[in-house]
Image 1 (cartoon, helix red, strand yellow):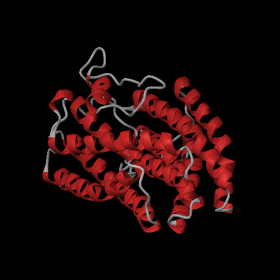
Image 2 (cartoon, rainbow, N blue to C red):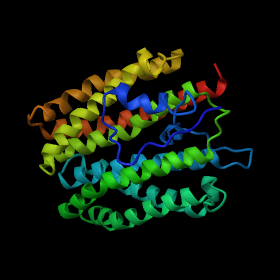
Image 3 (tube, helix red, strand yellow):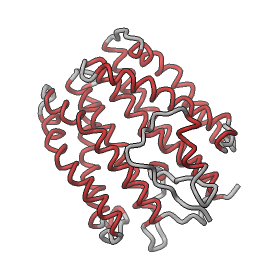
Image 4 (spheres, rainbow, N blue to C red):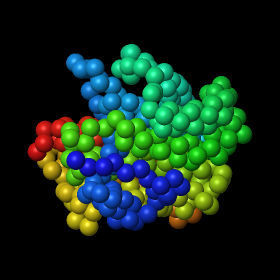
Length: 317
């Protein structure tokens, strides 16, 4: 049995990969990993039992990714990049954030959340997320209604990291309260955590890229984008080829190996345009559109990867 460790509030996610993963490998009292909520996005929602633990983990993880997707899509809409797709992404992410947060607070039978949250710590986390979300929500609605409302997009951008911090804490506490450590080994939880974190990072890179080309917080975004790219690529390579220093094994079967090869191949294409931004270069509208669209494709493929890691872990191979 292992212990789930909560990351310290305010801890940066942008570190060399070995440092980023040490909290999972060195958690006191066990050799362990924190299972990521995002890692459960591909859970099968057909249920024969009465437990809603996996569903709560699923929804909390999706909230974490939405914080960055909302900021990326609102920036894309107001900067005239892939406007139709970005508008659809923004509208869907807002509606899903509303519904998933409400489900975690009060229950939602269709989402198989069977009742209101009863754990005091998790309930407090949800209240903090809700408070910040209600601050951001009107600006999301404003961008949906008027794609030229740059001030509203800037407001979303200014609040996205706070919302990310709060949903990350929520996610960790829900995993800590609801996850059954007897179902998945510490080693496999670490693999799922790394893969799950990648989901959010795709959308953070989309947001950082848009900040650069739109000229809003561009210098800080350029530094963030470079660091996020490094973490994203290092994590993909660790999953594909292994990283002994933190106990990450290479892709354990052919399905996961193929998933990772697909992700790495697309990454080689996507990172070229992003590197141009990091280096201070300019992109055409077509290249900006490619970044936004291709990172959505990476997100979709990462969902498949997480699902395949979860199946591998549950088989106990």
